[in-house]
Image 1: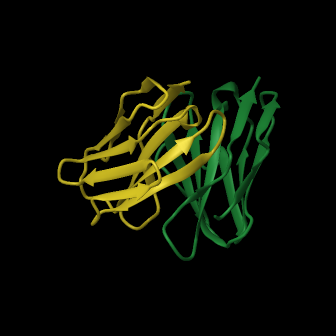
Image 2 (image 1 turned 120 degrees about the horizontal axis):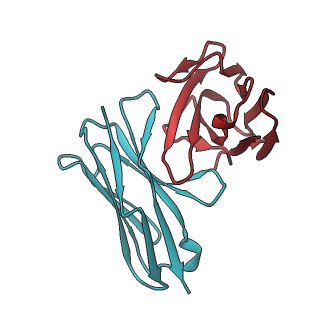
Length: 115
Length: 112
């Protein structure tokens, strides 16, 4: 099946720093990528949808200046958490969908801990 | 607003037992429904996808059913094994946008 690579898998940073998370589709072209956030024992919450070459569409309540999403190529999308604070600590997961088919393929997630 | 609920939140069973996980959704106008597996600290693996026009899908020991009119889906796991221990999430897709609405998940523990 299709593979989506997400890294880093874990990052610990100081409050105020920015963290970049990468999501790559390894064997298919991802026309659409989704970024989710998951709190412990909670559901995945969709943060934003990004289409290659265009601006991301953010869900209600998600600060676009806080969570910068770039989808510059058909195989790479990045999420940058700017000026991270402890409340941004969470598990972030990306998923990708190709041009054909409906299945979404998920990355392995990134655990962000902001001290 | 679509809401997805999974019951129970956690389940512990002895190895070999058959079990059912439940998922309910409030808006029956769904495009499809998927069941995922998530291991601790990991991403999601798609298990089964049921289109809105289908009633069930099977893969190995897994069987998922869908009753759109009542807003319910079940995931049946036959002859459970310790390796089945994980969190199982259901998600409904609204329209063809690709957006998924997830339930909170059921954490399953299969004891040897």
